[in-house]
Amino acid sequence: MTLQEQIRANRLRSALVVLLFVGLVITAQAFEVTPRRHFPAVAFGLVPHVAAWGTGILDTLASAAGTSVQAIGPETITKAGLSYVGLRTLGEGSLLVSMLLCATTISLIDSRFRTAAGWALSASGLSWIGLIHADQIAWGAAPQPAIGYLLMAGLFLLISIGRVEPPASDATGD
Image (cartoon, rainbow, N blue to C red; front, top):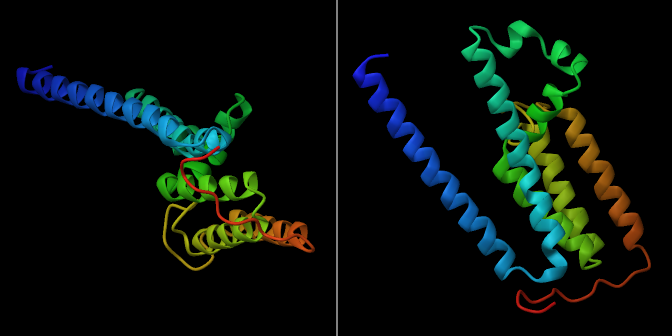
């Protein structure tokens, strides 16, 4: 490794350490400012990012071995006990997925089922056009997640029948 490559690698490591620190501080702050009853939503919102991180690690390991996940075959990884395709699907558009899952979960915790249905319907549309759960923007890009979210929206609407939506909760109270 040349001196210039070592310098680049050290800069990258330094940047990653700073990003990790910032991520930990932001996560801690999210739990500080969030009402206790919404903690599950905050934790649930981390899942798409963990999935994206996991597929990134698998891609990097394959690259370091001089190959790719596509060359190895996602089926081979699945046989080893890890669903690469599922992780990739969950992690695609992880920032938007995280926001939608958090909003949906908060609405469910607060028994606002129509609002949860609206978030699930939004996720369905974003999946269908490929902004989340897909590696490209196209009509019908991620039909399976889109249908799943659509079914969730329908279920939440069925649950809301005969129920009165409670008022929106404030951000400070439990």
